[in-house]
Length: 167
Image (cartoon, rainbow, N blue to C red; front, top):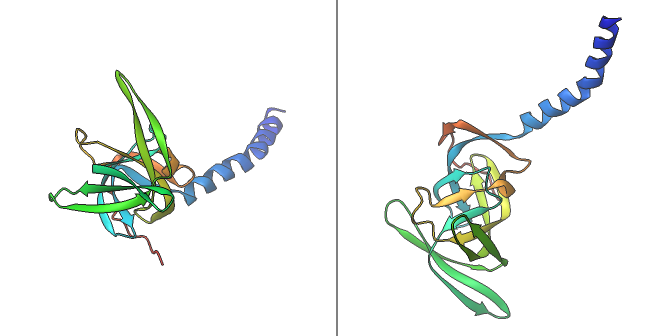
């Protein structure tokens, strides 16, 4: 009787176990620190992969909002580890209100980027532009990028170089 119950329980659980195994196999395993490539400009920088953050964030210098036709755009610079900078322009998708523990909230412009981490490529990823000069990594990758595509292994650091095949 006990064997019959255990056998039925195993048969009942097999689709669940198989489903979880398939989900895991299809996802990219990335470390808690990875190089992220920003496309189509094709430059990379170090990013902290943060499963506690809802969205991604990028350190920018001198953000300046302006109108281009009927759209609000923003011009900003990104500093690299070698003290080089690149200046980009993007349309502003929206503004995010960021709550900060023990500090006043912030209003940040959100723009879209195409991002590559290892072989994981995602188009039109919303990224809020922030002053992250006090942080070790210029970019933070949040759950909205990771969802359904990646598993973060906290024992890995810089486990892969960006190598997305984009046409």
